[in-house]
Amino acid sequence: MDLSVRIGSLVLKSPLMSASGCFGYGLEYADIVDLSSLGAVVVKGLFLKEREGHPPPRIVETPSGMLNAIGLQGIGVHRFVREKMPELRRLGAVVIVNVCGSSIDEYAEVTRILSDCEGVAAIELNISCPNIKEGGIQFGCNLASTGEVVAAVRRATALPLIPKLTPNVTSVPSFARAAEENGADAVSLVNTFLAMVIDPETRRPAISNGMGGLSGPAIRPIAVRMVYECAKQVRIPVIGMGGISSARDVLEFMIAGATAVQVGTANFVDPFIWPRLQAGIEDYMTRHGVARVADLVGTVDF
Amino acid sequence: MPPLDVPALVLRNTHLSPDYNVLHLEAPAIAAASQPGQFVMIRTAAGTDPLLRRPFSVFEVLRDAAGSPSGISVLSKRIGPGTARLYDAAAGDRLLVLGPLGKPFSLVSPPAEAWMVAGGVGLAPFATLTEALRSTGAPARLFYGGRTRADLFYLDWFASRGVTLDLATEDGSLGAHGRVTAPLDDALRARAASLPVTLYACGPEPMLKAVAGLARTYGRSSQLSTERIMGCGLGGCYSCVVRVREAGGAPHFVRSCLNGPVFNGDDLVWE
Image 1: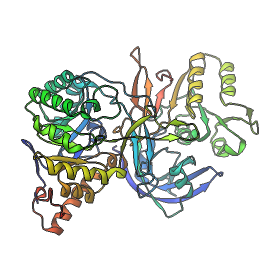
Image 2 (image 1 turned 90 degrees about the horizontal axis):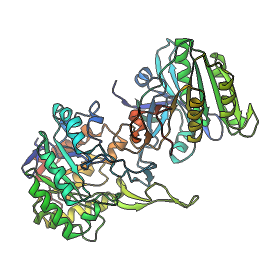
Image 3 (image 1 turned 135 degrees about the horizontal axis):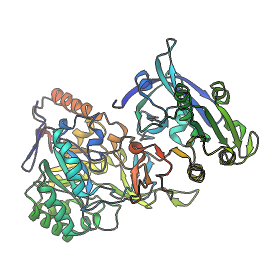
Image 4 (image 1 turned 180 degrees about the horizontal axis):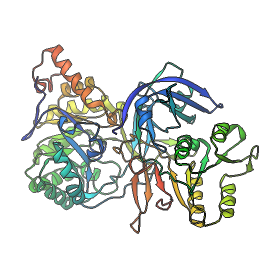
């Protein structure tokens, strides 16, 4: 049974990836998850420098989901390369780094540093975080800015480049096309939906940042629709995510058009989910006589 | 030992009051590995509402007739949909329990005394700590506060294990009238500086802050168990941060699930 999928020049042994921001730097899970069994470990977003993030409370639960505004707390790219990459390499993880920036120069600089680091397999470009004032979504909500930052980072690296798109725009496919036209090897979507929870008793927002990003099973059907729309409009692979919690959900995204998928919130609920997802995919392939999982991509009967 | 995730059988659910309950859960491997101050993440529903697990201190390590660890109990206070489900759980139910997690308390040995300070459901980590202190022989004292006398539990349990009790209620119905930090302050003032004491505290943040302040005032060390909204318990989500300042460094956020939940009181920076 062949579970491998191709993202640009990268061949992954499985379509299953951790979603950035939901798996720390991967090493937090090393004693309970075989990191080398994942298609890729997508680590938490990195700026050039360390970042403090927002004060707590940073999350609140919602019906079948959660709202977060962590604020991209992180150790910065230099400490990541020094402190995390040696162990990730030793464990045989395929590492995709989520790159953040508050300017185009910063995105390119972080990408250059990572491109010189042995073991970094690809760059996911975070132009979609809804929770920070500078950078992130300001690039991802404007077509010209998206094109500009993708083109600049493209010049900075030969690694596969995967802009991560926000759903908080009128037409996600036009942003996927802008990414493709400026040299992206794939796109990943969706980041979280900008959302808000207010406590009527106190009349205050439930999290310190006021607004945050909605994730979890609640967003899954919207994410599936967006993946479906984007996959029809670009030739590069689409990496799908949004509320995936079971093998059934993985298959749904792949049939909608995703070449690979990322799992985020479900890993919080069940960190032992990974082998079960893989077994469920294999069971489906057996039942449906599918030899290569890549043959499922975009096969929705509609 | 890496944490385990087990579908634990609910052995018993004891309602202590209209808000508080103690759940006995069959989980021998987690029980055997648990150290005082550690916690578990419990999934309160099989579906997606509520979606996330809830963190609970290991309250007691349960033992079988031969004395081997057979399970754990958790002390829960009904404050939301997750804890409401635990309040309503029935013997025979199964709940996914992930643990043990987090950094435990450091134990003291005689002649040092262990003074535990609990506010409300913050009693939770102190039963296992009491058992562990019995093995070091350190004298233990519990300062325990609640809104009213009906909110104070397990008093005989602690007393029968040689723990000296100092109680406080906000309505004055049992023990000192007011906050538990008042009798703690009195006791610290009365204690000779030459006699070592370590403070252990768990409870609402204003109480922890007050205990940290008293520890500083009287030159005592403190170990504070923090409570934060926690998404995963494993360091993945960065939700449960507390601000710390270690040895001259700048204040920064660390994850209470990995770096805590127990912190040195001198390291915590209060908002």
